[in-house]
Image (cartoon, rainbow, N blue to C red; front, top):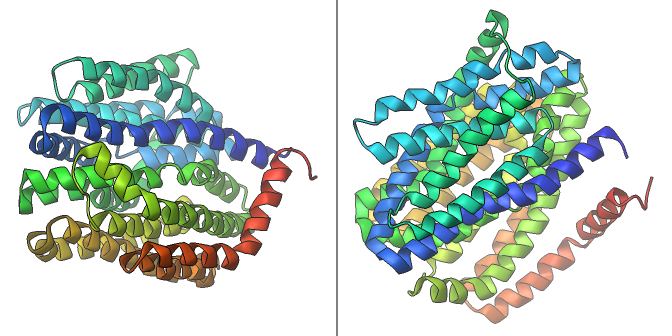
Length: 440
């Protein structure tokens, strides 16, 4: 098995665990806290956690650049350059101490989340994603213990706190701490200045629904939004298993000047994600509303279907925007991310007061749709990725809209989607067989 296949397989297996457990934390947290403390308390708690996670983005300012250049330097054999970047990247989250006077939990959670984001980017960057999975698994045990405690924030404090402890131990144990050098710090600063804005915009689209819905419509609506998105956002973790596996390879191959392989990875990942995500969403539309309503104790309504559609659009454009950000076109990726964040912010100012949870989801669709258009434009111009790769997405969305008429019609739509994607299904089966060694 070639090096690229080994990395994809190892990181895919790691991501099944790490991304799956990380996504599961929000769902479990929302379900248990809603039952134990009530819907309003859930809304206020998730609002503060989302603010902390949003504040963690500037605290993890160097995270994306650290992962990108760690992978690029790994490809070119510059291991000393990798070690020289770790101290500034991992110490920066401590700037969150300035938030403690505003709110104790806000500051602590922001610091710990900043360390987690930095560690994740770094370990995937040096092609050790499986180690990140081990750390997340151990920390998840602490998350579960946190529900025993009476503090509503205890699960996340233990989960992120353990990750921070393991991060420090890991860097020392594997000798990954080196003396910072001006050349590497300059790279981190120059890249992060653009990547930061794009990341901030992306996180606003993920964390913003919680605190914006509380601000514009009250804690009860924020609780409803928390319940719906805690389930819908699971889609942004599980189908990203393959995406997380190939992210380091974008920079690795770019460092080796193999630009055609970057294009190939983006195209194939997009096609596979659209197939997998589209199929899952058809199933969730058939069964998910009833199951989720039973779990949380209230009807989540049609907003759940709109949330699934928004997640599908988000997942579809991710490989191409990651390709832009992992090569020489981070400015382009930042531009489209800012465009999407601005579009959704403006739409929420009207839609949330007018339509509550439904307005939140429609705003997300507007934002993610804007980013999709921008990504398709720049990916075609700079990476030669054809916009036609999104045609199956349009087919899926058209057929999934049948859920608003009848679930019987949706079943026929699902069958039609699988028939349309029959060639991609066959290709996916062939790919799985090749990973198992049945093909050369």
